Every structure is written in structure tokens, then in C-alpha cells.
Amino acid sequence: MRLNIAIDGPVGAGKSTISDAVAARLGILHLDTGAMYRALGLTALRKGMDPQDEERIIALCRELDVSVRHEADGQHTLVRGEDVTGLIRTPEVSMAASTVSRYAEVRKEMVRIQQQLAAETDMLVDGRDICTTVLPNATAKIYLTADAEERARRRFLQMKEKGEEVPFEQVLEELKKRDQQDMNRAVEPLRQAPDAVLVDTTHLSFEETVDAILRIVEEKRHG
Image (cartoon, rainbow, N blue to C red; front, side, top):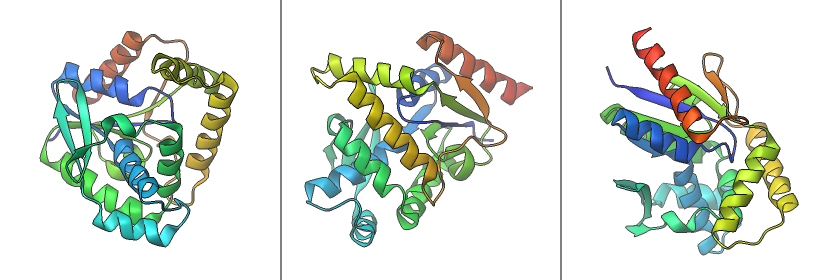
């Protein structure tokens, strides 16, 4: 039986970096599904498309050549062979990704790809509808979160390290707006699955969070 771990949670909860560490400790692959929606959002912006134009976005998704590659430093996301990993983490792309992910036909296509990948190998998959839609029968399901101020603080420090000077208040406002959009979309909104274990990282260090998730996985595998 495949070892599939599903992790959901809001923006800024640290899903990508924590999932990288957990997957590495378990010796399995990590699929960051959010990067796939970000790749679509980036491509739409590059083409001058309005992310609110559902019909054009769906058409773009159907022809989008998006793939992932795993390297020593984690997942790399490619569009038509171009590595866009370093281009998909801007606030503008984040909002575009949140917008395009609301469309049922976009999610249907992305979920099909994600389920196919997870069926082929042991894998940790993170996103916003993994426990509820993509991997409802995962070995372990986790809802990773932290309070909005703490998530904004972490995002603010990350941006500062990259030389991006954005006021904390703006980061917090954009994060809350993203939460609102993700949790209230009509198609597969962000929510905690009934059988997902809540891990609140507000007062946990990175290593404490990784250890907590590994304990949950071990209990689910052998408990």
C-alpha cells in the first residue's frame, strides 16, 4: 500500500518548507500542489490575461505544460520546460493563483494530475484540498495552521530576506484577503477535513513542527 501523506492549510503556514523536511526524513517525494496553481497564475499574467476571466483561464489550463522535478534543494516547477520556481512566490502571483484555483474545471484538471502522481509512488502532497479532495484515503491527513499575525510575520521576514521592502500591515492585509478567498470559494474551499489532525504551529519551532507531523504519520501507519 502506498504511503500517501496529505497536508492542507492556509497561506503562510509553512506547508512547503515543513513538507520538504518531513518528506526528506521519510525518504519520500514531496509534491507542492500550490506551485502548480501558481505556475498557471504566472502564465496568465505573462500573457496579459485577467485571472478573473474564467473562460480564458480554463482554456489556458487545458494547454498548460506544467511539470515538477525533484532536486536536492526540493521541488522545481517547470512550464514548457522553463524552471519558474523562483518566479512564482510573489504577492501578485499568489493572488492570481488563489483566483484561478476557484474554477471547477481548473481544479478538476490539476487534481487529475496530482492523483496520478500520488498513485505512482510514496508521496507527501500539500495544498488546500488534499485531505478533502485529492487524497481522501491518505495514510495520514494533517491540517497545518498558525494564527494570521504569526503567518504574516513569517512571510514578512521571508520577503525582507529577499530584499522586498513591504510594510508588515500590507503583508497581513494581503494574507487575510487570501484566506478569505481560499476559504469562501464555491469549489473545494479550504477547510479542515473531519479526520485530519490539527497542527497549530503558532508557538512551535520548525523542528518541533516536523517532529509533531512525523509522530502523527507513525501513529497512523502502525497505530
